[in-house]
Image (tube, rainbow, N blue to C red; front, side, top):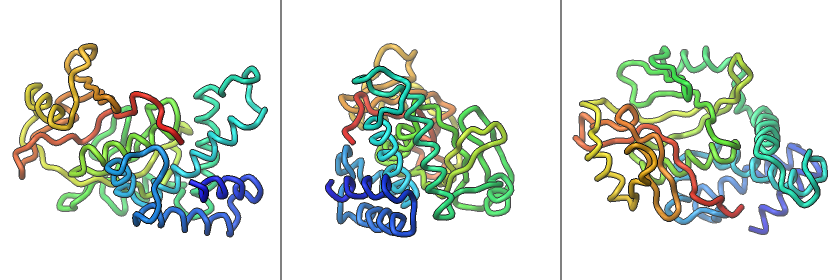
Length: 262
């Protein structure tokens, strides 16, 4: 995408100036409304990116620039000709996404109080996410920590989740850091009432319809296709929707089998 390369040059020259932010916003809207495609995604996956909202698209653009700039520069602690390590990429992506989010008002300094005010009390907390919900609301809010090697892969995971499981599509609304300094993605997701936990057979059948097979290495909770890997598909993440009676995936680990082309 020529526009993306031109934008990367502008970010390198001007940072997140008003002009740069305007260009990012215009490109984000072009991608969201189907006027332009985002490199590396198929058309159905592209729809999952758009379901995530403009903050997801914008952050994906900035993360792509972070990786490109880090790879192109010599300011990495690696031998010449060797790509930077994932931790270096992740740090740079986090740094630039934070700067971009602060410049456009998507950074939550006190996210817990903001989310509690708008979405209700915290109802669950695990290693991956804090979940907030107010009875009667159609959506929950989450502070989602990355369990992926880079921030870009965490963003891609939201895109792929939305593509595979549109009934529980995640919509990014901002970014924050918790008390430990860990970056979290703030998002909303439809609230699904659980009738019961899904069985292994029900999960197998659901993912088989989407082109996945058991990878025979995950004790029945990991699946793979030619393009995408699904992991952590245990009943706590997949349950039967009270309204539809169908298996519904709320959260899982989802990633490309091979790195997508930027």
